[in-house]
Length: 131
Image 1 (tube, one colour):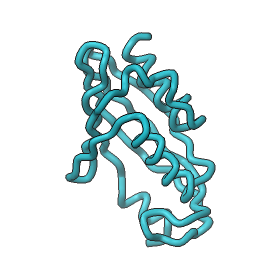
Image 2 (cartoon, one colour):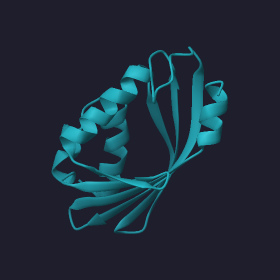
Image 3 (cartoon, helix red, strand yellow):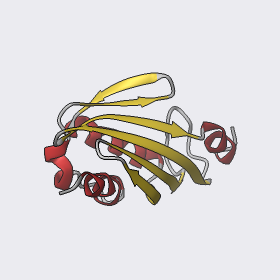
Image 4 (spheres, one colour):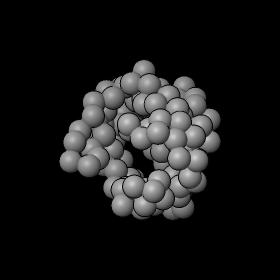
C-alpha cells in the first residue's frame, strides 16, 4: 500500500466505516497535533477516539477533496459532516447538521505514520452547533 492509499483508507475505511484494520500496520504510536495540544495514539486509542465522535455524530463522515503527496508528507483538504445527535465535548445533542472544513498534514517515516497536524475551523463548528 502506498502512503496516499494509507491516508485515503484512514478516512474511507477507518473514520467513515469504523475499520482501521487495513491501515493498522502503518499505525504504531503516532502523534496528532490539533488546537495547540498533542495526543499520542495507536490503533486502540484511535478506535476509542472514533467511538467518542460516533456518540456525538452517529453519521460522521469525512470527504477528501484533494491530496498533495510530497513523499514523506501528504497534505489533505477535506470536510467533516455529521448530525449532532448525542453528547460531544460536553455539549448535549442539538440535532444540528454540521459541515466543517479541515486540512490535515501526515508525516511518514518509512512505512510508519508518525505525525498528523490537523487544522479545523472550530468557529464554523461552534456556529453550526449553535454555540
